[in-house]
Length: 331
Image (cartoon, rainbow, N blue to C red):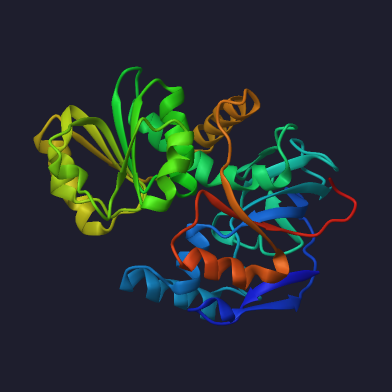
């Protein structure tokens, strides 16, 4: 099968098209013929090794000494079940699905095998593969954090880094839950964020929201770049500061704030299988009801994955950059 292999870390020219062995499902796995994936922030960070030094060294050790086979990135996807292992009960051949590969990666290819009890669900029939592919990372991350913030009708919510995949879902979810949303991002994304329901927008290059005197019930920092102390000061009493990408120092400071005040700092944490399943059902319900949607900036064929990543590197993408895998007999 055709796959995009990362031959070296760094700029996008490390991607190369290779022919690799088509995977075969084990007893508890499904074989998925992929139609769409994404150039996500996670893939961008992996390609560039954009991690703290210790994690970077562990990743290099895993890739070069432990992992076998070529390194194929790609984490979220949509496609069709082509075959199932003999122990699989949740899925059958020709099911249209979307999901997340986890640390196995591998979605920059024509086929992938995943366990049936992984982050995998039936695709809403009203969505194209391109619209469904961003749901399993951007959509589920937004659901997790919006629920963690216990958002209620009438609250004021600020979303920092609102113009990317997770942020665009979060804006829509917060509005669905009845919040008044302030979205913070660069100037070129503000009109799009208004169209998603943000009542206030802030260009972070021109204004520091922490100096405005406004307070918020929930501040959700998608990208981990909001001023920590200023954000905590901008919280209402008993407010929530949600951090999706935070280093160890911010985690330590967050524990201190949560222990010493009525304000709570919540970081990303791994979810149980039951929690993930519940969040997938909640997300699918809203998608099927037309309450939220995936924002797609651009679409590239799999062969142009390097060009897609170059665009992501520029930092201007609105929502999602989708990668399509040619399947002539699929719609």
